[in-house]
Image 1: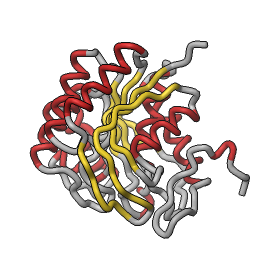
Image 2: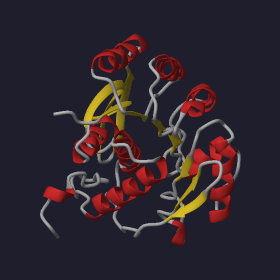
Image 3: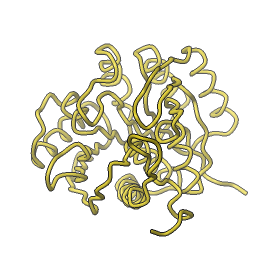
Image 4: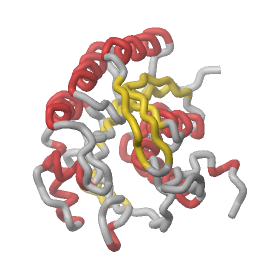
Length: 267
């Protein structure tokens, strides 16, 4: 039985809500076989991150080559790449192995505005990886960093998407999860010709850990199944919205979305 394959290149979340764990759960939900290349290992739970250890660059490269040369992939996504050395190695692999379509979740700044990687890594993402992306999915603060614009309004989101597009990505999705008021959860899409506002029902819950990882991996899963980029984004947003409705109230902090909501008890 042949099934689509998607590759995630990202970090491990020991709490199971984000990173590689969220990606593989999302791929499985979409009946896409997931392969992975770990970039870093975190010690974290619902309350925060206690430790981060980078994988050796050679190990990251070996993982990517092993799965792609044997199994192949119909879509690839990147998440937390952690440092410039890993980012540059991933860029070389994307180019050398023709990893297309490519979804880049530019994990640089948290939705609260805290920068997660250093300036050299930001530059490597901006100049090396984002120009290779089929879709790049920055949150509000990442979009500000990439565009150089302050983002407060819907028009600001649109202008930022257009400016980020100029970096070379085929399409940009500026996410509104970090926006306030009626812009919460409103995303803006730009692909060089079409500027769309994408809205779904806003789910009020503190248990939203892993939404960015889940969205980008759902986009990759839909691309692997042959959907066009905008349709892949729309379907992914619907998936995340429903997963938020069934978010898991576990731990003492911020729980994860319910990736397998179809088999969870109906509330």
